[in-house]
Image 1 (cartoon, rainbow, N blue to C red):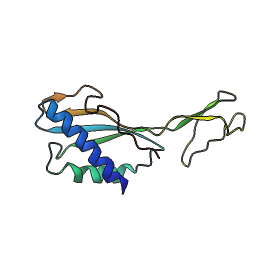
Image 2: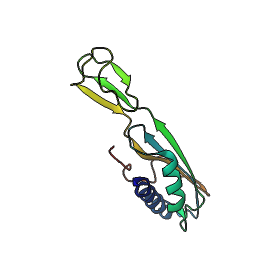
Image 3: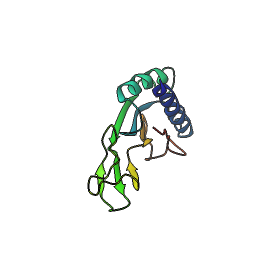
Image 4: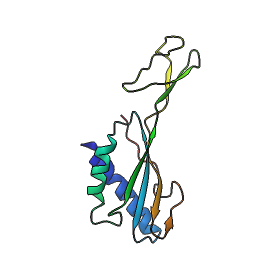
Length: 133
């Protein structure tokens, strides 16, 4: 289950940021999760709870913010939500050869809140966590 490796990576990055910020406990972690990231939110939440045990994140709330998958056609510049499973054929002109995926593969920490305040957006990560679907 790759959700466990994702959860462990998130916990590791947030623990590092919490240590650097002299936080004693983390209460909330918000993740941006793209529709095509290949992540099952319920499985991630379960794994996150397990990965947090015995860390400064123990008991932290995990909030996932979904990102709709969108694409753009290079031929006609039309944009559309691709859905799941992804439909990468342009609904305007019918082409599928010049399609650019604009969103939907995101997997990044947006915000971390610790007991003595909120970390600035993006603070817990030197770089976003990326999982390609």
